[in-house]
Image 1 (cartoon, rainbow, N blue to C red):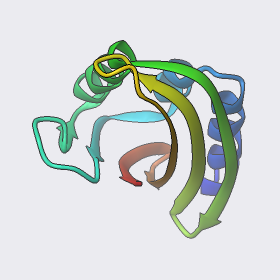
Image 2 (tube, one colour):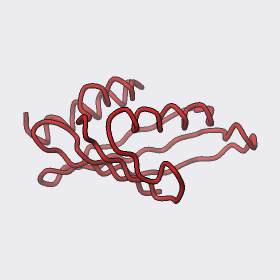
Image 3 (tube, rainbow, N blue to C red):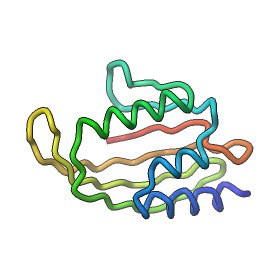
Image 4 (cartoon, helix red, strand yellow):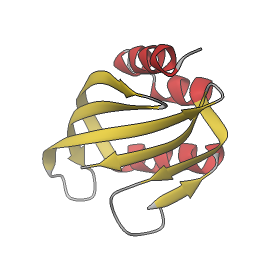
Length: 117
């Protein structure tokens, strides 16, 4: 499977709202995830740690809608743009989050993801 084929399928799964399914299918066991912030989840190493980071994020936000654009492919990488309408549960603040994820693929799996927002 080429990076473009993986990126297209991964993005289509995300567009259906199945973030867990996309990660389960394509994340490498050794994936490294980088967030554009400081703190304990700034860098998550391994499939389980990335899944846990996502679960924690989900527990702290109420998502009203997500738009997924892309993928935009270049070599062994691709980018996806996410626009999320969400409420931060801790504060009740409703915001729009505009985020780009850049993914690196090796041997048919995503080995790195970096988020920019």
